[in-house]
Length: 372
Image (cartoon, rainbow, N blue to C red; front, side, top):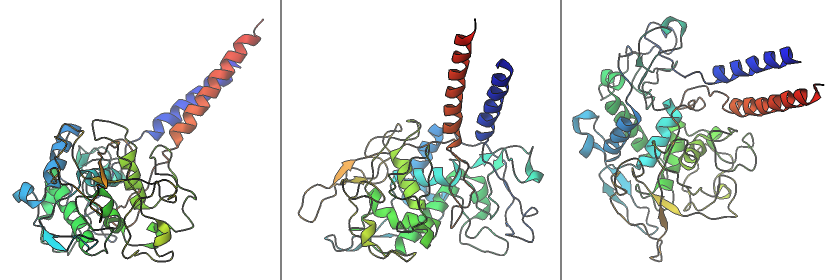
């Protein structure tokens, strides 16, 4: 009995350590030749600490006025959708909560890491994380990063500079905001109003439609520890709600749109009424909207580009509650597609190991009781 138990114990320990393996591809122009043809070599560098990342997120959330020459140029944002706010052009500002959750889903907050794929990169020193389809750095910037492409930003800095990379990815998100229909009153300071822009960051595909029957039925807000089949934007929103480390940012229970009011067969939902549902598939319970903030990570609660801007309903009443975000740096990135290009590790494996380990302990105790 003891030999079998020991064997099982070591097997479980092996499963635990293999499941914790870090995600760090670093493809090069040479290793993608004849395929995606990445155009820029990975750069050597040291990944920022969580505290350093939080400072970078605060800067980038405040747009080009804050990042200056440390990021590319970015056009203004449309604010308001006449329900009731009139449409105006405003300087580009971004909810810190959304940026942090997207970056966690894309790269696990990695600009640089020690590569474990492809085989030609294994053993190399810490350098830019580059996915197999040429997504670079923390924002997994893909557009403009292949051979022959000539974007209006500095491709070498996307690979070598964490702030510049995050700003470039944020500009892509800005473009998704500009090219998708209104969510609610389309206020950039409201976290939930970025729902379709986040969807677009991964691709306006039917796979991200919450009515897709291939998704987990009766989905509650996504919890990275539990996994499940969710849309990309649901995973980003769920990460905001389920913190793993308060050092990254604090939890906020975001509201979801009513999927019954979206197209059931399209990859582009069109205009979406004000989100107020408790989860991706249930509107039985209601939730408030949330104003973006970098607070909860050492920054003032009004930081993140929006100060203390209030948000009101058409009748003049308040419709937001303060809400911040926390996420997990050691979770694997999200599923492939659009700007998110990575295979997801089976995050539920840890739960299986723990349950098996507890069962093992029970067997040991029973074996001891049976001894004469």
